[in-house]
Image 1: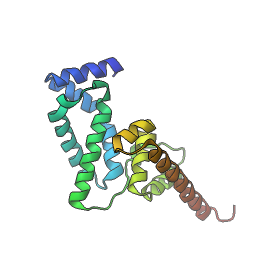
Image 2: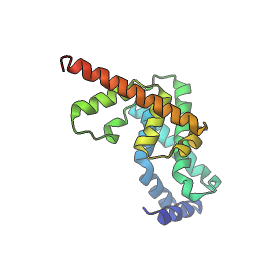
Image 3: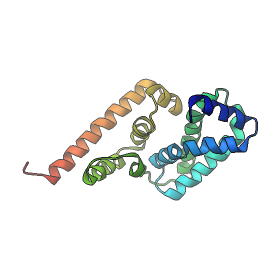
Image 4: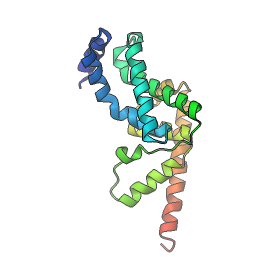
Amino acid sequence: MGGNDYVTYVRQAQQGDKDAFCQLIKQNEASLYRVARSILKLDSECLDAIQEAVLEAYIALNQLREPHYFKTWLIRIIIHKCNQFLKKNKKIISLGAMEEAVELPKMDDYFALREAIQQLEEKSRLVITLFYFEGFALHEIAELLGIPEGTVRSRLARARKKLAELLSEKQERRYPFS
């Protein structure tokens, strides 16, 4: 879906075209799932949060002033819904989105990266997911999370450093005599 098509679909959806709204959701469903999985533990929790986010987006669609910001707006809604779900259920958070989002040459590397990302704190997992797997720019992540861009940069830097440490430790345990 091109940029103009995207804006056209948003405008059509704002005028009550349900098919246009469905196209927008279909275009963004993988992103919604990956972001939800970066916050919530279980598939069922993710699907519930996505369902609530889509319903809220549909109801509030006319409040969106800039159609080209639809995806950013939708991601903000899913983050909010996931955080509400966490508060309500007080569950432990983990990241399973890496199953779909990462392709590494070796399965061992893939599992090591997935395990390392799961060991990060929630805030770090979320910025890693938004930046590397969803392609958001630093300023967009800052806007989505309501934090300064410098905070996003520092969270990414700390997350990268921690991932490097965790992967290095894993490598040393795997090949202690190399």
